[in-house]
Length: 197
Image (cartoon, rainbow, N blue to C red; front, side, top):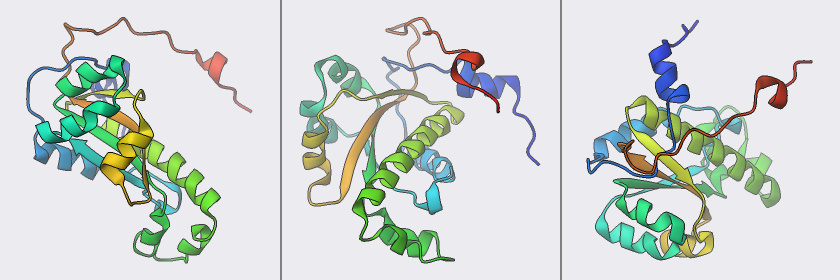
């Protein structure tokens, strides 16, 4: 059985973690991105479907490619971030199910029923995007997840001719707490959001 994490770890992952709008000019290495994914990939998905696909936008050329599709309010901070992860959904994820879920014919559950496949792709890739945030935080990185971009334009630029569609973006780096870090917004209490039956 797993042991409870320390308060310091819980603070880093949840209680003290913030959505950053500005980052220090410090590199996030390719090795760190590999380590991040190698943690995030172990989060659960339906039938181990793993429909998330990620483009880590890091180079100047890739940032220029991304730039026209960012909303005005997100453009400057995204271009200044060391890395922006495009979290995307593979809508034919089921073609990998013989590899990922070999003990059953799980591909047949989705192939030929695109409505169910699309819903499964969106739900589970969104879950996986949250795992990316938690993995980044566990490695000492900070995140700024967001919407606010032209999905169709971005998809044409980064995923043309594929069944992959963008979901949301995550700026990743070392957060600069001295700039654009707003007071934490309230959260709902247990009684406001939950019930036990």
